Amino acid sequence: MKYFEDIVVGERVAVGSHTFKADEIKAFAARFDPQPFHVDESAAESSHFGALCASGWHSAVVWMRLMVDARHRMMEAARARGEPVAAMGPALGIRELKWLKPVYVDDTIDYASEVIEARVSESRPGVGLMSIHSTGINQHGETVLSFISTTFVERRPVTP
Image 1 (cartoon, rainbow, N blue to C red):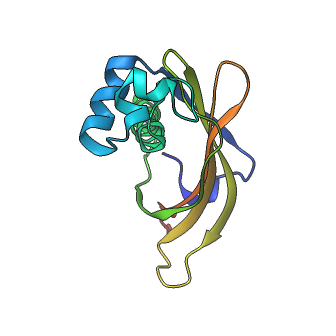
Image 2 (cartoon, rainbow, N blue to C red; image 1 turned 45 degrees about the vertical axis):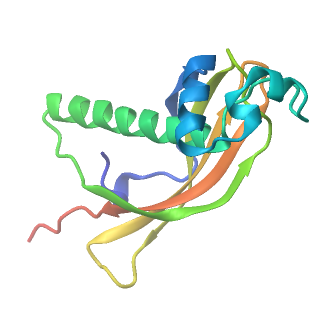
């Protein structure tokens, strides 16, 4: 990961993509969000969604998994080049979480995150705060998920 000083507002990272399948939609929902339109095709057909769709929480959790994987790949690539890797996290939370469109069976969602703010922490001088706007966009170009999160990022060590 980059040090705080190397972060550029406007930088965008493709996090990854995921295709939602019926079995995984139902399994996630049965455990965490057991509403009829997430677990039963017949009930979903008569709902306002018109078909089985993923829980919004499911779409957010997939972003988290893909983000962790993307960060690990970036860290390993930096280490392979002999570059130092800055510590990142924990996250301070999310805001403005919006589920804008349903995610249906066989939808492929492309996830990305863009840095929208970077500022030095007033209470912890060794770290900065990076805010990112993350989105999930389906194969039709429609945004299905949007939120902002803020995370601690290690500042470059001062060399005497």
